[in-house]
Length: 514
Image 1 (cartoon, rainbow, N blue to C red):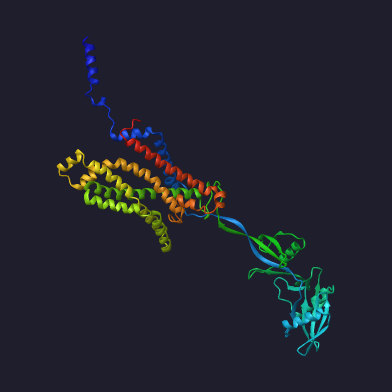
Image 2 (image 1 turned 90 degrees about the horizontal axis):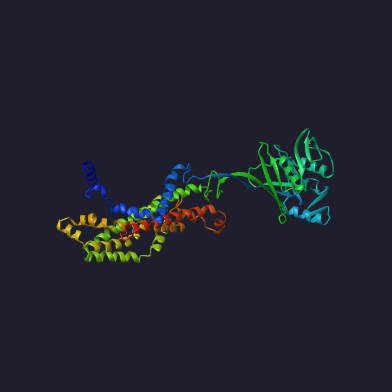
């Protein structure tokens, strides 16, 4: 029996109510945490915020691209290369030392239209002679050759000098009459079926009615290209490929203007341009924006900007609101009246017009984008503190009359210590709730301002400025990957802050039994 009694006494001693180990009392902070994590929506909001913070701050470090890094792609642009016409009008070439003026040309055309072989102008006689098909010569009365009129054009071969007047005259005379050879300037020349003019085995020129004029100065059109182009025109081909002397192959597109009777030849040239609105790919999972920047990276860095702006603005609002609200609630009297009138004035200030005016001023002054973000945070924080100040004032008005504040006065604690050591800590739970829920509103405000072009500027990004890139219905309906991800990130962040704010409000309420 003695052993059993001894064990019973030991057991009673082990489970004594005076043993601190048997009394498990949760601290107020632990109770708040317990209530918070019992709220499923609050836990969901916390998870959402953690995901957004990891995405924004860790993702930007992992990604190999910078937020302002631009990407390029090769595209083919249709560039005006040459214009082609088929000569159906008479052209003129003057003999050496002669002057065949436009008036003489007009008189020649009048005589030719009337079927005359001679005409006079200012007392001087001129004779015209049909040398071949669509080929005429004009001479003075003494038999001196003045000029020739032709539709078939004598062109110099690649790398050759322009043929002399005598060579042109004899070549056209032989060509229009079906000849195969001619003599000019004491040299013999031959004509082949393709209209080539040969001096021995060397091609010095060729005859053609097609006129090829380059669109840019300094562009040399080779004979080989002209022949390829002429074949395309004769076969009514609208697109052909040609490899130049350097081995570079290009594609040419041919179109005809019936009004001007001109063929326009466009060369498809490769060009490096921004990869604008590139579709999602392995390299860019969310595609690229209008500046050729990776959208996923822009979302990450944009999240940084939006979240940082939200926290700094709320910090500024809280700092000003706590100081002014604490002074107003503690001292009362004229101090309270003065602070509350200031609060009323700030409540009457139209925030959006003021921000629009300041944004336009910063645009006009071309403020640096980074400095502009600082100004934006200061403006939003300076305009948003009255609500916090009023809440702090109301809480302190009720707390300063309680017994613990009477004890602080009796102990001789200085005023600043009473306010910031004993009063403000009792307001912190309400402050945390208001600040948490205010973060979502601040992010929405920043997104709205950026969407209106008054917030974050290029090259920096925020979720609002990303959505603002969708400035027309075509981009909105076609390039969904530009604005939908930013909208989803904005929705998740704001909902997360609201859920956490609701959870903290319920957790700090001592009447909650959950």
